[in-house]
Length: 280
Image (tube, rainbow, N blue to C red):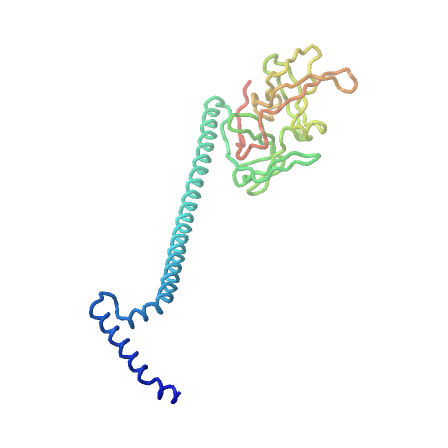
């Protein structure tokens, strides 16, 4: 190194002087940054670009997170609003159904002055097995309910008869139950018979009309009501309609298959007739 400076030192000084003069001239006559500043900028440029990219990415992610959070909050608010509206619609439907039932009951009271005392009841259980068809209601002795009281829907169609009563509950055997037996009358012909639950028909929600007169001329669709004979049940309660007339196993007597007016699967509320007046 010493030998190099010894032999070439003058040229090194001369080159350094020239470079210094050139840089000085460029700094005076040029609008651009000084070479040192320019060099610093060149070296810093990649870092500036990286910083800018990172900052832009971070801002984008932050904006995405905020937008996503806002959408989630908005969706939650909309779901809550929809749930409240659906609840209001369900309540309005229930209120409409309740009003319809009460209106039907009022009409029934006007039409059937002999049915003097009703008790509204809600069905809490519907039991269907191979040998029984029954309903459990939320009314009992505390409400004046007794065994053998008739149960109807809001149109006056017969649902069944109370078979057992507790303090705040009761059991209703529906008209298709095998233990049900009611005096019946064909409304059009005035023919009398006995409406009975039948083991072979109960699964189809049907019952029999037995002990018909030999000369009875029944038609499909004939209306069958309670006869009221014996004073056990009110007269004129709709049991159902005749679907077909058949011969019994012996072939000697005819019986009719009845379709109940009531749709048991759709029932939610019924009315218990606690007292009635005999109509001659």
